[in-house]
Length: 375
Image (tube, rainbow, N blue to C red; front, side, top):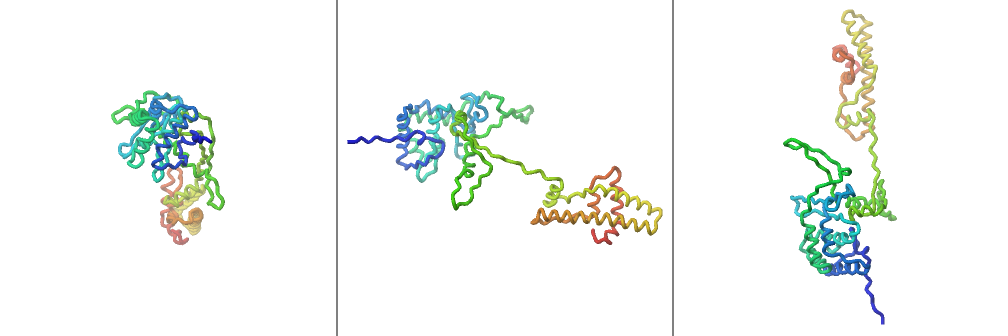
């Protein structure tokens, strides 16, 4: 005659901060909590009592200061921020001694109940529903005792003590002006959910590449297993550190930046030719000379200087438009400015700009624009 011995799963197979794939029916929720308690006994570990669950509840919050500094003292390491406009309490995460991590995983294990959203015991206590929460809460109370349930519920819902001290070395301090004068000292703290959910965000980058399936995007992500130290921050943080390499786009050179600005509605690029100022100065000097004495050679000289300036500016406009169309083929480019504007838009020596503007807006220069056939 053989005796059947019940095989109790290991605690590592029953407790986790991530879904375990153990799909429960409604009538099997209480049995799952009872199985967890037997697993503690089977491994020679005392089942958690009321004071253990109270410690878990008191050490759980939306913001864990140990994420900033491991030197943050117990009792001064958890904050709970509640959005008063929301219709539910925020998700909280534990931050207690790593030796009690199994207790945390019991309270925060995502329970996968068939046909219902995956939620932990803590979430069922903080945000109960009519369908599943009564079964979960009752099943936990039956397995670990009503005193344990009362202690956990009270610790999760009772306001936490005021934070009175911080290890200043690891906490940034910002001074904000008060409306009535003076400064307000503020310390920014990231929500614990940002750390916990980071794994979910990066998980697709580490999926196994299956044959005949779309290529998995890998990015530049790396996972590294570290020591158990993160467990002293929170059992929900885990032993993996995820890193990614980010590089800034190269800085555009001046010409590329001006093309980009022009293609996006900005001003036309500047014609940077050092010889333009001298050419305009020479043209202006000849205009002054022709005002006192003029002959056919002086007039032809003025026309040649004006045409060289006009044609050079027109070449610059055409080359710029060609570059812009090549870089931004699908953009409807704005019309370029007039030739005189292209010539004038540059740095001029002191008292030279007005003189240059005068000769480029003169009738003789306008006449040469018409002869060349540009505006």
